[in-house]
Length: 338
Ligand code: UFG
Figure (cartoon, rainbow, N blue to C red):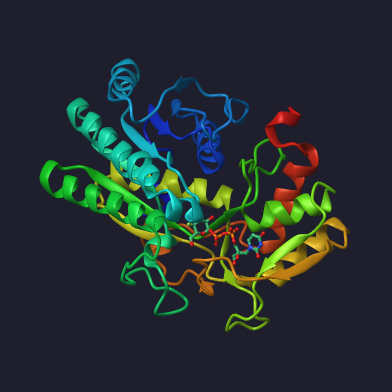
């Protein structure tokens, strides 16, 4: 089964949000397999420099633009990364998240339905679980998000499930843990504005772009008091999307699964690893907890392995940080350096 699933999916594929961090690595993986790709991205957080595929610069709030892209490129499937993804902002401005995530996805599903495109691979999140009742989190863990970002991702999953039941949509909801890392050649990587994620921020200190890293709380119930996360390499995420799409195209059923390594690292452990890799002392300061941070998020279960034959190939956190460092040291100002 896994041999068939590692074969390339059939294109052309429309990749919504394909100029973003995870999307651009997926686009590169598809192109490496010889699959025709078209990216639809409004470039609100994506980067034109991150892709070599044709770009439709458009917004999923614009149904006419989605229709035109589907008409022009006749994709066999959609991979949908486009979303707003800041937990804190979703708390203060939920309207933006319901519009940009839920409403935009409804637009996309409606236009796919009208055009007869029935396969979609969707970026979901472990944020749909909320405060986990069990660590590591099993694939079938109840979903009870604690912030609007997680709730919008869950609404999007529910929408796809209902469309599947009623209209025959085939979907894969891939629930990522903490995406990190960059391409092995350092040509594409993580470049958010503002940057809020731990690994790029830590590496920006090593680059001399920031004075120190602030550790959000050291009084959690964990081995060193700082939060534990499961950092999954963006290249492994990309590989899982190709397999999930192939799985749908082989008509093997809808899929909801985790993408994580199963191993958690504390914030302090990440900083220590980054010190080793960069040779920089990376000053750190303990500050109060950040609102909405669960103490531990670690992937459990083996559905992605069992169903897709997927296992992380670059699961060692030192590789994850080393590859992120490769991108940042080549591009200290992100894509503005290119
Ligand atoms: N952290 C710090 N200092 C920083 C930044 C982060 O201590 O300057 C800590 C956070 O408190 C957290 C850990 O580092 O404990 C990781 O934080 P990130 O912001 O890198 O990632 P999150 O776990 O908050 O977020 C990730 C994804 C989100 C997703 C969320 C699910 O990036 O998109 O997981 O909980 F919603």
